[in-house]
Image (cartoon, rainbow, N blue to C red; front, side, top):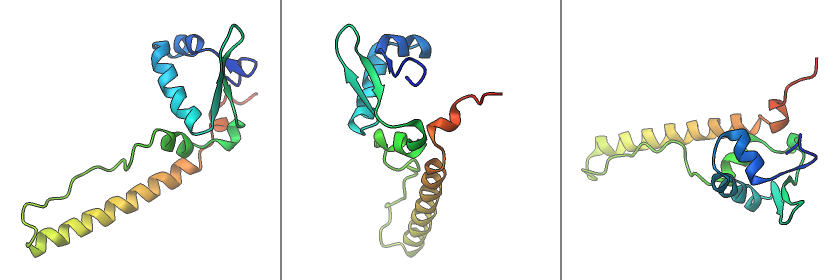
Length: 120
């Protein structure tokens, strides 16, 4: 969108991504809910960025789709009275929480403008 006079249709984006416009509309709908894009109907309509690329991080995009934790290793509750099982679950939960925090911190440092080709 940043290269197409500020707007792009679902069909144009779908052609660039080699996918279906319905898939694009679904994805863009989630980004619209997050306030990152807007849409206009009509012959001159299309999707438009609502914020500069330098203000949108990978974390913003990731959270727009509300995936929950990327670390979905399940803990065991087969033997809830087992001291070892409870200790292992605590350790695993703590490790996964730390990993999720580091993952989100990393995503928050990458802005979409950093993906654009640099002029030589």
